[in-house]
Each structure stands twice: as structure tokens, then as C-alpha cells.
Amino acid sequence: MKQDMIVVLDLGSTRNTDVARAIRALGVYSEICNYDITAKQLLEMPNVKGIIANGGPNDTVNGVKIRIGEEIRKSKLPVYTFDYEENGSINPMPESETAIADRIRSFVFDRCKAQANWNMKNFIADQVELIRRQVGNKKVLLALSGGVDSSVVAALLLKAIGRQLTCVHVNHGLLRKGEPEQVIQVFQNELDANLVYVDATERFLTKLENVSDPEQKRKIIGAEFIRVFEEEARKLDGIEFLAQGTIYPDIVESGTKTAKIVKSHHNVGGLPEDLRFELVEPLKMLFKDEVRACGSALGLPDSMVYRQPFPGPGLGVRCLGAITRDRLEALRESDAILRDEFAKNALEGKVWQYFTVIPDFKSVGVRNNARCFDWPVIIRAVNTVDAMTAEVPEIPFAVLQKITRRILSEVSSVNRVCFDLSPKPTATIEWE
Image 1 (cartoon, rainbow, N blue to C red):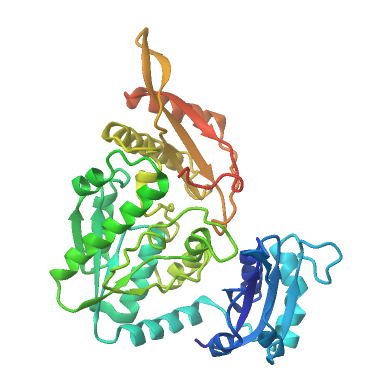
Image 2: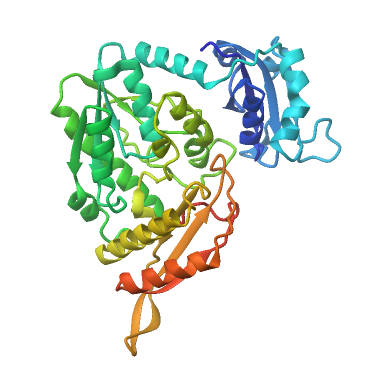
């Protein structure tokens, strides 16, 4: 790695990502490390120029208050301490990322002598070198959903190792309407990637029958994904690596040593212990906006780079509770209507993510002058930069009315449409 680095040491803060992003906004690379990293491990990391010790409310682990290690303090690395939770602290935490950047600018550049050489051109060059070094002349299998993360990983791997990459697109029956066809068109026909298409709909839906716990659903989907890839790998010669579109928010939300789990991600919490591939995860330290910037720098079209985010478990975490085929189909149709109307009303580029959710309960309604008992549809729309926080944008009421009319008339098993106004936090972007 050619970039200089500032390490954010997690001493129980709830704002580690804010600090890491503020450092990167200054043009300097940053990584978040657990509180118990040793001085030796720190010094073995490439180009570390300084440490920001980041304290906060989660600073007690197993009844012991955590502190920066004495060996780290005695090392030659400069240390800046944030402890914004305690009144009267020397360096309380500013409110915004911009304010944090202003506060630490002198420390980063004057004390640490770090160079502002963190940019996508350098990142891509570094990752291409690291991928080639890791993979050698072996072959890599990529789980290609067609979403932003996996698409950028595909482009990066194609740049690094070309035809050594085989992309596998698994239709797990939880994709959006028309999505498998679109993935085949873009990646096989336009980008000329080695693409294997697997229709595993029945296999996944059978595994998910009567499973209502969202964490269990995610782990079943994640583990089954790996099994499908293993089966496809057996049909190919020399596959030793599995590439994934893991990004930094996936890791943070799957739990750290001082932060409780928010939700498991299929590419973090659902991997089987007997996984026989070595992982290739070139985007795992990038935030969502950085992934998009990387995709643009790699030459991917805007229609792909700014494509709506879609979780690995797909509609499986939007068909709440135990998945049923009728609700899943209603979810797919209502989501297609929502996306169609957002496109027609020029909301595609203005709203970061939008989708429908169908819970596992029914409500009474009236259809054709008779009582009906059908599903409600919940519309979710959010704007965010890094997927760590999100706000609900203002959607014209006339657009919401049109979407509602279409869903109620075109999706026969639905009798009610609701709009979710909750920001993240306290809500998450997804419902499960």
C-alpha cells in the first residue's frame, strides 16, 4: 500500500466511522482497529503515521475500562485522543465530519507528517497489485449479484486478473423483477465476463420454509450461497479463491469488540466454518460512496455505479417473517411498480434507495364491495451518503397516491399501502 495511514483506535466510541471518514476527507487513508491491537501489530501495518484514540460510551469490556496500551503510548507514533463522552475532556468530539476534519488537520499533517495521497487512482493501483500478489495464476470465483458492490469488485478483478475470474450469478428466487435477465445482458453480453447463471430458486425457498427469524434467514441464505459456489467451483479447474463485495458498513454492522451486532450480513456472518476458498475482498475498507467513486474510476457506466443498492439476501429480508411464495410474488410486483413510478417522476437519481416491504400479517379491507383480508405494503425510501445514517426524503404526495393506486389495483393480494417515515437511527434502512 502506497498511501500513508492514520489508525482510528476504537476505545468504545460510537463514532469511529465519522472519524475515519473525516481523515479520508483530508485525503489521508484511515482504518479502524480494535482496542486490543498490539504495538507490534500496529507497527507492522503499512505506512502508519499516527493514531487517533477514540473513546466513548462503550469503553467497558467484561467489567474492565479499556485504555490505549502502554506499549502503543511508548511507541514513536503520535497519538491524538478523542473522548467526547466525558465532560471536561481535553479533546471532546466535534459534531460533524467537517468539524472533526478541521480539528485533526494539524495533527494529521503537521505532527504525523502524513501525505494527502488517498484517492481512487492510488487505491485501484494498490488493490490491483494486492489481488495479483494474493491470487497469482490461480482462478477466482465471484458471487455476482449485479448490485453496485459486486459489480465494482468484478470490474476491479477483471482489471487485475482478467480471464482468471469466473462470475457466478445465482438466482435464489429473491431477486427483483427482471433482474436476472438484466445481469446476463450487462455482464455476459456487454462486459464479456466469464458468467455462469444458476437458477436455484426452489433450493433456496425450500431451505427458507417456516424460517421467521431474520438473523437465521440471512445466515441460511449466506451459507447456501457458498454451497452453490462450491458446487460450481467443482465444475471448474483451479478455483481456489472466492471474491466478495464486502464493504465497511457490512463489517461494522455485523459487530465489533466494543459495539453490539446490528444485523449479520450474508458476506460477514453467514460463512460456513469449513469454507474451502480463500477470500478476496478488495472493497472491505470502503464506505458506500467510495465504492461508487471506485466504480466510476474503473470506467463502469453511471447506470451501474449509481444503481439502487440491494442486499445480498434480496427480497428475503423484505418479505418479513417466514417467506411465503404468494407474499414474495406480491412483494416483487409492488417493488416493480414503485421503481417504475420513481423512474417516470425523475426520482431515480434523487433518492438513494427505495423499495417495498410486506410484513407477515394481514389487515381487513374492502374489495369489490366485499370484505377482504389481505397484506399491507410498506414503502421505504431513504437518502444517505455512507449507509451508516439515513434520512427520509420528501416524496410528492401525488406520486405516492399514484403508486398506491397502482399497487392496490395491480397486486391482487394487497389492500393497504403505508409509507415509512423513520430515519436511521433509530430504524435501519432495511426492515430485517
